[in-house]
Length: 233
Ligand SMILES: [Zn+2]
Image (cartoon, rainbow, N blue to C red; front, side, top):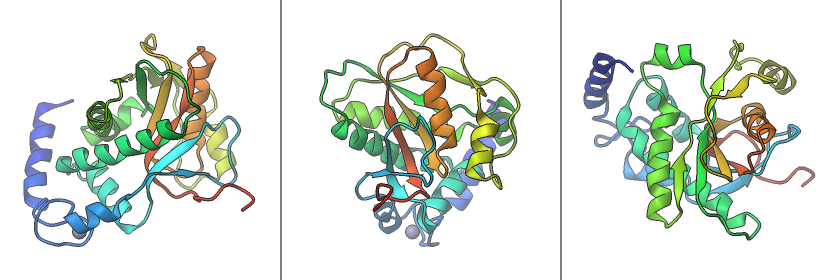
């Protein structure tokens, strides 16, 4: 990551962070009102259709105006003061998942960010999901969960931009696209991502991990465009 880009992002943060990115209220990048709207209680979520192999997914928030404004400002506009509040919400979503996971002894849980293509990270000048994941791990430890960041996957081949693709096309686009870049230090793991839409990324991430014998408890995301009711209800 380039230091100068990091500094200019911080400068942008200072300038634009003077108002809430969602409602323009003067103050922090997310005002207390919008922050509380962004996920009061994590809930299980289901894309429709549910891709095969999708583990249980918990979302901190619905992908509404506030979630969209915050995630886009963080990801695309480098408003880095949002890493912490968004990462905390992500941590809560992981806690929601762990609370509902079948009772068993979990020692250390690995938190695996869904991989992003290296050129995407380079073009943005920062890795927004990695930043949020670091804060999520801190939040989990604060809650008494032994969590470790496990950045173990990489994008192994070129994939098309997912936006504009149907859920089937997304699944095909990502098939076999992720590879293990280093040994997974913990078992079990939870996959994390910013947004779940069709579930293709989470399903493929889980598949890549399971292929290496890793136990995937489920996934957690900041926000879900997906429905919050089980299919059929
Ligand atoms: Zn606001």
